[in-house]
Image (cartoon, rainbow, N blue to C red; front, side, top):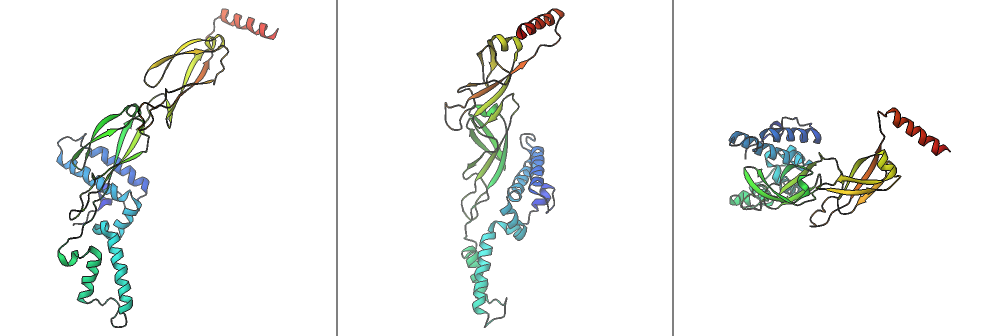
Length: 297
């Protein structure tokens, strides 16, 4: 297996922070994404390399193994285990051998402990494939209902059902859709992280939604009926007389779907904002002055 410089692929240096890696990955993933480069084999190959580089460098543990062991980073645990076992043997053999003086059998034992005999028997050891990480950009409106998506990961199309109520930053694991195992070992998994953007007038907090609705002064004082937007429809509300600005009302079951609980929803909380009239006419001003006198009497 040839050495692949993951730092070079992402265009960063070895001192790059986690934030630097994330920014570089997102920029390149957008540039070479198969949806934006249809039938472009070179872009498809670059996209694969970018995902592989991100999978290794965005994981602190994998990055440490890669920095120490290069192309053999996937087998770092086995290498370290074998190294410790060999050092332990050396401790017992030091009286008869100088440090670091291996016999032929020592080399055989080293590779047998490291790869289960693969060093002597032609590579029979099996290793689990590498996990792949992917990010899926969604809009809040999209995750209000359950829907299907097709993702292209390393040249393979994966059909995915996204349940309603998925949260921003949530991750799901698709078993066996990662890298291929070595010597018939099990495949790795595909880990998908959802980035949910909110471009609506609603604020989401878990399963509840929050919005602000303007009402005019006269409706606030005298009461009346208004029509407000919920996330997927409109409803009529009765405003009580003498409603103060900042008053909150709860619409039960008009919030966001509860993840993987079909038919269950959070609540919608509406805050009233009383809007004062502007550009009053002389007659309106006189009427307000008359009201002031009445209130002061």
